[in-house]
Image (cartoon, rainbow, N blue to C red; front, side, top):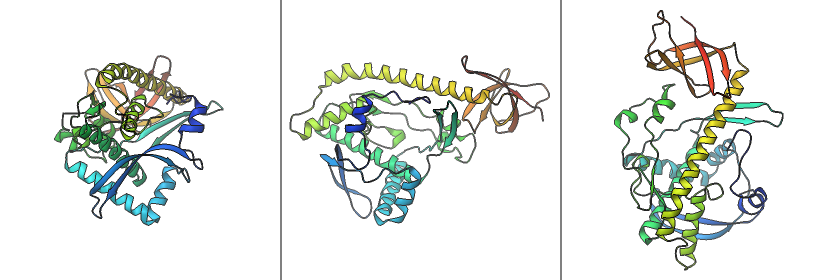
Length: 331
């Protein structure tokens, strides 16, 4: 996902005609059917090959209205909130961090906006996605089906749990405690999610390993057994993980380039920032509007502490070298 466009894993026409969830057209799917009781306890669940037809594609704002106005929506809200509460009880760390969306328009205009992921619609999508991944992991573990599990054996520290979500520096403070999951063939706990087992399986159009795991389930449902053996998965996932790391590096580099390209148009203008940390020769300042942390120089007459709000001038921006120079205004 790049600001200038998407690089798809499958041919775009195949995605549009066969694989996507556009409304109005029946599509083949792998469904998870879960039966809850009135207290949101799971009574039973099963996977099924299915055919679905999406009635309407909703934005998050439209979904928010939908969930709150109909009885089914209220049920989904209750289940999602209860699932989250139970995960927190078992050690989950919930950090609903905003995203910076950078898009390049057809006219070449760069659009930058901060998107918050804390609505009830986001919570429902997130919790049911996590539920699918968790129960898929349970399916693999209980049946002894080879799978690629994601685990994290280190609990989130009390220091992280004590962070104030209303602190404007919360996004950069929280992310320091979030470590990448371990990938392997052994079903081990994912403590920061508060789960005993976890896989990623909900995005087979954009993540290759998700597609591999869905094929594992479908093979079991069809009575043919797992599509891939342990040995095949052990050879496969390290290669895929290298590609995933490279993809993330490219995404971060392109997002940084286009953000700095956008900020270059503000050279000479003033921005607001928050002092986030100190080092030998200066400090780092966080620009919350753009979710970026920039080193700045300090002069001897500046007496600052972490959390201080400051005014800065964007003096120079070099997108190609990924550099931005901010001048901290005294006083």
